[in-house]
Length: 215
Image (cartoon, one colour):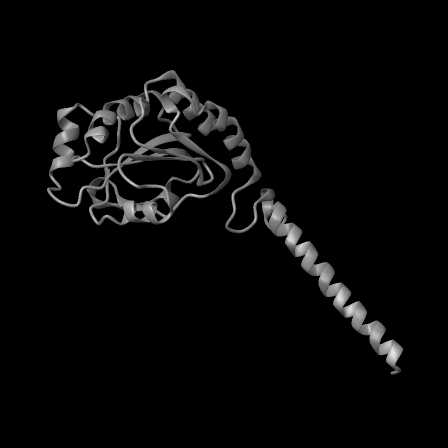
């Protein structure tokens, strides 16, 4: 094979490899690598659309809501349900969530809890749930006694006494203190986070929940 033919073959090989790399890059950027416009480890286009609807609603009683313009999968959070059943956020896939971390020693958390219970009572359904996870690490009898005392009826009692749930949120840059609430869509994508208490009975908050659900 002469030198010109060898050079031509090399250009074809390198050009083909470059074209494949370009296609792969486009697939990653635009979600062509998986069904439904979703690349592995990324959120579908629909999540960004929900965020776009949610963003202008972050005002008034829910002005503290920080909306993710480019949604990504929610942090991996594990906790226990009634009877000590092991759960994670993945067990709620297909349902929009308001994940709330709270503790009995947190005064704003205690003040917020009745409104969270009313939100679950009013809006809880197959497409939405308030997941309020208690993160007390001592005196583990206190959370149930407090919830009984204030008459919580609709909220399922979830807890993580290990501190791992809060630590996962902290490492993800989502929690500096309590309460912290995360808005998660039905695909498990984080659309927004709220640091501090919210009046979940307020019209502004209910509109934000409606947008989270996609309604």
